[in-house]
Image (cartoon, rainbow, N blue to C red; front, side):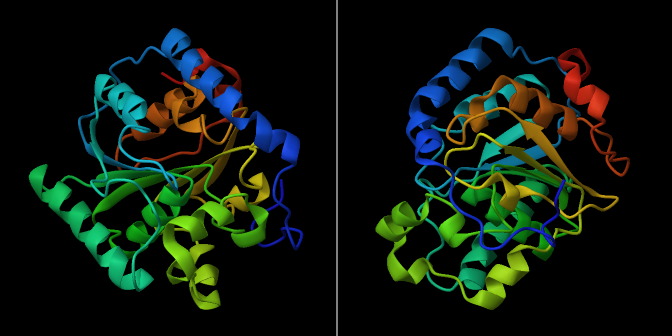
Length: 257
Protein backbone atom coordinates (compact mmCIF):
# COMPACT_ATOMS: atom_id res chain seq x y z
CA UNK A 1 0.00 0.00 0.00
CA UNK A 2 1.60 3.32 -1.00
CA UNK A 3 1.91 6.12 1.54
CA UNK A 4 1.38 9.82 0.99
CA UNK A 5 5.17 10.17 0.73
CA UNK A 6 5.47 7.72 -2.17
CA UNK A 7 2.40 8.59 -4.23
CA UNK A 8 2.96 8.75 -7.98
CA UNK A 9 2.79 12.30 -9.33
CA UNK A 10 0.65 13.68 -10.72
CA UNK A 11 -2.45 11.76 -9.71
CA UNK A 12 -5.37 11.78 -12.10
CA UNK A 13 -9.04 12.16 -11.27
CA UNK A 14 -11.13 8.94 -11.43
CA UNK A 15 -12.44 7.74 -14.77
CA UNK A 16 -15.52 9.24 -16.37
CA UNK A 17 -17.29 5.88 -16.03
CA UNK A 18 -16.84 5.93 -12.23
CA UNK A 19 -17.94 9.56 -12.10
CA UNK A 20 -21.14 8.92 -14.05
CA UNK A 21 -21.99 5.92 -11.87
CA UNK A 22 -21.80 7.96 -8.64
CA UNK A 23 -25.49 9.04 -8.32
CA UNK A 24 -26.90 5.53 -8.79
CA UNK A 25 -24.30 3.95 -6.53
CA UNK A 26 -24.99 6.56 -3.84
CA UNK A 27 -28.69 5.64 -3.92
CA UNK A 28 -27.81 1.97 -3.52
CA UNK A 29 -25.41 2.74 -0.66
CA UNK A 30 -28.11 4.68 1.19
CA UNK A 31 -30.68 1.95 0.61
CA UNK A 32 -28.25 -0.68 1.84
CA UNK A 33 -27.72 1.17 5.11
CA UNK A 34 -31.47 1.24 5.79
CA UNK A 35 -31.69 -2.51 5.21
CA UNK A 36 -28.49 -3.88 6.74
CA UNK A 37 -27.01 -1.30 9.14
CA UNK A 38 -28.60 -1.68 12.56
CA UNK A 39 -26.73 0.20 15.31
CA UNK A 40 -25.96 -1.43 18.62
CA UNK A 41 -25.26 0.57 21.76
CA UNK A 42 -21.46 0.58 21.81
CA UNK A 43 -20.76 4.24 22.57
CA UNK A 44 -19.74 5.92 25.82
CA UNK A 45 -21.75 9.07 25.16
CA UNK A 46 -18.84 11.30 24.18
CA UNK A 47 -19.51 14.16 21.74
CA UNK A 48 -18.95 13.87 17.99
CA UNK A 49 -19.05 16.57 15.30
CA UNK A 50 -19.76 15.65 11.66
CA UNK A 51 -18.49 17.89 8.84
CA UNK A 52 -20.24 17.50 5.45
CA UNK A 53 -18.57 17.33 2.06
CA UNK A 54 -18.40 20.08 -0.54
CA UNK A 55 -21.88 21.24 -1.54
CA UNK A 56 -23.47 19.13 1.23
CA UNK A 57 -25.09 20.09 4.53
CA UNK A 58 -26.78 18.69 7.61
CA UNK A 59 -29.43 16.81 5.63
CA UNK A 60 -26.75 14.82 3.79
CA UNK A 61 -25.12 13.66 7.03
CA UNK A 62 -28.32 13.12 9.03
CA UNK A 63 -28.35 9.34 8.51
CA UNK A 64 -24.80 9.03 9.83
CA UNK A 65 -25.58 11.21 12.85
CA UNK A 66 -28.76 9.29 13.63
CA UNK A 67 -26.88 6.01 13.40
CA UNK A 68 -24.25 7.28 15.82
CA UNK A 69 -26.85 8.60 18.27
CA UNK A 70 -28.52 5.19 18.37
CA UNK A 71 -25.07 3.64 18.84
CA UNK A 72 -24.53 5.69 21.98
CA UNK A 73 -22.70 8.85 20.90
CA UNK A 74 -23.67 12.53 21.11
CA UNK A 75 -23.51 13.30 17.38
CA UNK A 76 -23.64 16.96 16.33
CA UNK A 77 -23.86 18.71 12.97
CA UNK A 78 -21.01 21.13 12.29
CA UNK A 79 -23.46 24.07 12.33
CA UNK A 80 -22.04 25.73 9.23
CA UNK A 81 -24.91 25.03 6.83
CA UNK A 82 -23.97 23.96 3.30
CA UNK A 83 -20.21 23.44 2.94
CA UNK A 84 -19.05 25.81 0.18
CA UNK A 85 -15.43 25.76 1.29
CA UNK A 86 -13.61 28.21 3.51
CA UNK A 87 -14.45 31.89 3.42
CA UNK A 88 -11.65 34.46 3.50
CA UNK A 89 -8.25 33.55 4.89
CA UNK A 90 -8.10 29.81 5.58
CA UNK A 91 -6.51 29.87 9.04
CA UNK A 92 -8.70 32.71 10.27
CA UNK A 93 -11.76 30.82 9.04
CA UNK A 94 -10.60 27.70 10.89
CA UNK A 95 -10.54 29.69 14.12
CA UNK A 96 -14.36 29.71 14.15
CA UNK A 97 -14.57 25.94 13.65
CA UNK A 98 -12.01 25.34 16.38
CA UNK A 99 -13.95 27.59 18.76
CA UNK A 100 -17.08 25.52 18.09
CA UNK A 101 -15.22 22.34 19.06
CA UNK A 102 -14.21 23.91 22.37
CA UNK A 103 -17.81 25.00 22.96
CA UNK A 104 -19.06 21.45 22.35
CA UNK A 105 -16.40 20.15 24.73
CA UNK A 106 -17.51 22.62 27.41
CA UNK A 107 -21.16 21.59 27.00
CA UNK A 108 -20.17 17.98 27.64
CA UNK A 109 -18.27 18.55 30.88
CA UNK A 110 -14.87 18.84 29.24
CA UNK A 111 -15.00 15.51 27.40
CA UNK A 112 -12.88 15.36 24.26
CA UNK A 113 -14.71 15.59 20.94
CA UNK A 114 -14.34 13.15 18.03
CA UNK A 115 -14.40 14.71 14.56
CA UNK A 116 -15.76 13.02 11.43
CA UNK A 117 -15.26 14.70 8.08
CA UNK A 118 -16.62 13.63 4.72
CA UNK A 119 -14.50 14.62 1.69
CA UNK A 120 -13.66 18.35 2.08
CA UNK A 121 -15.12 18.20 5.58
CA UNK A 122 -12.31 15.82 6.47
CA UNK A 123 -9.76 18.52 5.64
CA UNK A 124 -11.43 20.77 8.20
CA UNK A 125 -11.55 18.00 10.81
CA UNK A 126 -7.85 17.21 10.40
CA UNK A 127 -6.78 20.85 10.64
CA UNK A 128 -8.93 21.51 13.71
CA UNK A 129 -7.34 18.51 15.44
CA UNK A 130 -3.90 19.97 14.75
CA UNK A 131 -4.99 23.23 16.37
CA UNK A 132 -6.88 21.71 19.31
CA UNK A 133 -5.24 18.36 20.15
CA UNK A 134 -6.27 18.66 23.80
CA UNK A 135 -9.93 18.98 22.77
CA UNK A 136 -10.04 16.26 20.09
CA UNK A 137 -10.27 12.56 20.87
CA UNK A 138 -9.99 11.09 17.37
CA UNK A 139 -10.42 12.05 13.71
CA UNK A 140 -12.17 9.95 11.07
CA UNK A 141 -12.21 11.05 7.43
CA UNK A 142 -14.41 9.64 4.68
CA UNK A 143 -13.01 9.88 1.14
CA UNK A 144 -10.86 12.89 2.02
CA UNK A 145 -7.97 13.43 -0.47
CA UNK A 146 -5.71 15.33 1.93
CA UNK A 147 -2.57 14.17 0.11
CA UNK A 148 -3.69 15.07 -3.40
CA UNK A 149 -5.97 18.01 -4.11
CA UNK A 150 -6.55 19.89 -7.36
CA UNK A 151 -6.50 17.85 -10.58
CA UNK A 152 -6.75 14.50 -8.75
CA UNK A 153 -10.45 15.15 -8.07
CA UNK A 154 -13.57 16.02 -10.03
CA UNK A 155 -14.62 18.47 -7.32
CA UNK A 156 -12.53 21.38 -8.55
CA UNK A 157 -15.17 22.83 -10.86
CA UNK A 158 -17.83 22.72 -8.14
CA UNK A 159 -15.43 24.29 -5.65
CA UNK A 160 -14.73 27.21 -7.98
CA UNK A 161 -18.42 27.65 -8.73
CA UNK A 162 -19.25 27.83 -5.01
CA UNK A 163 -16.23 29.73 -3.75
CA UNK A 164 -14.38 31.29 -6.69
CA UNK A 165 -10.68 32.06 -6.60
CA UNK A 166 -11.00 33.08 -2.94
CA UNK A 167 -11.08 29.40 -2.04
CA UNK A 168 -7.62 28.63 -3.44
CA UNK A 169 -4.98 27.53 -0.94
CA UNK A 170 -1.34 28.54 -0.93
CA UNK A 171 1.15 25.74 -1.74
CA UNK A 172 2.52 25.91 1.82
CA UNK A 173 -0.97 25.32 3.22
CA UNK A 174 -1.57 22.38 0.85
CA UNK A 175 1.73 20.86 2.05
CA UNK A 176 0.54 21.26 5.65
CA UNK A 177 -2.70 19.44 4.89
CA UNK A 178 -0.73 16.28 4.13
CA UNK A 179 0.59 16.07 7.67
CA UNK A 180 -1.30 13.76 10.04
CA UNK A 181 -3.09 15.19 13.08
CA UNK A 182 -1.47 14.52 16.49
CA UNK A 183 -4.42 12.35 17.57
CA UNK A 184 -5.62 8.88 16.50
CA UNK A 185 -6.71 9.23 12.87
CA UNK A 186 -8.61 6.91 10.53
CA UNK A 187 -8.91 7.56 6.79
CA UNK A 188 -11.68 5.52 5.13
CA UNK A 189 -11.33 5.32 1.34
CA UNK A 190 -12.67 3.46 -1.68
CA UNK A 191 -10.75 2.42 -4.77
CA UNK A 192 -13.98 2.76 -6.76
CA UNK A 193 -14.47 6.39 -5.68
CA UNK A 194 -15.73 8.33 -8.69
CA UNK A 195 -14.91 11.83 -7.39
CA UNK A 196 -11.45 11.72 -5.81
CA UNK A 197 -8.37 9.61 -6.45
CA UNK A 198 -8.24 7.09 -3.61
CA UNK A 199 -4.45 7.27 -3.42
CA UNK A 200 -4.76 10.80 -2.09
CA UNK A 201 -6.67 9.44 0.92
CA UNK A 202 -3.89 7.18 2.20
CA UNK A 203 -2.45 8.08 5.60
CA UNK A 204 1.20 7.86 6.48
CA UNK A 205 1.68 4.78 8.64
CA UNK A 206 2.27 5.40 12.31
CA UNK A 207 1.16 4.11 15.71
CA UNK A 208 -1.86 6.44 15.66
CA UNK A 209 -2.94 6.44 12.01
CA UNK A 210 -4.64 3.95 9.70
CA UNK A 211 -6.23 3.73 6.26
CA UNK A 212 -9.29 1.49 5.92
CA UNK A 213 -10.62 0.40 2.54
CA UNK A 214 -14.32 -0.05 1.74
CA UNK A 215 -16.19 -0.58 -1.51
CA UNK A 216 -18.38 2.51 -1.67
CA UNK A 217 -19.17 5.46 -3.89
CA UNK A 218 -17.92 8.90 -2.93
CA UNK A 219 -21.39 10.42 -2.68
CA UNK A 220 -22.77 7.41 -0.81
CA UNK A 221 -19.86 6.77 1.53
CA UNK A 222 -21.44 8.83 4.32
CA UNK A 223 -24.42 6.41 4.29
CA UNK A 224 -22.74 3.12 3.34
CA UNK A 225 -23.52 0.33 5.86
CA UNK A 226 -19.90 -0.81 6.12
CA UNK A 227 -18.75 2.76 6.71
CA UNK A 228 -21.36 3.33 9.42
CA UNK A 229 -20.26 0.21 11.27
CA UNK A 230 -16.56 0.99 10.97
CA UNK A 231 -17.06 4.56 12.19
CA UNK A 232 -18.99 3.33 15.24
CA UNK A 233 -16.27 0.75 15.93
CA UNK A 234 -13.53 3.36 15.79
CA UNK A 235 -15.43 5.77 18.04
CA UNK A 236 -16.20 3.02 20.57
CA UNK A 237 -12.57 2.47 21.49
CA UNK A 238 -11.74 3.57 25.06
CA UNK A 239 -10.07 6.97 25.21
CA UNK A 240 -6.30 6.62 25.32
CA UNK A 241 -6.40 2.98 24.15
CA UNK A 242 -6.78 3.41 20.41
CA UNK A 243 -5.67 0.53 18.17
CA UNK A 244 -5.87 0.17 14.38
CA UNK A 245 -8.62 -1.96 12.90
CA UNK A 246 -7.30 -5.46 12.27
CA UNK A 247 -7.58 -6.92 8.79
CA UNK A 248 -9.56 -9.88 10.12
CA UNK A 249 -12.08 -7.47 11.64
CA UNK A 250 -12.54 -5.75 8.27
CA UNK A 251 -13.57 -9.08 6.78
CA UNK A 252 -16.06 -9.94 9.55
CA UNK A 253 -18.89 -7.41 9.80
CA UNK A 254 -20.08 -9.04 13.04
CA UNK A 255 -16.84 -7.86 14.67
CA UNK A 256 -17.48 -4.19 13.89
CA UNK A 257 -20.23 -3.78 16.45
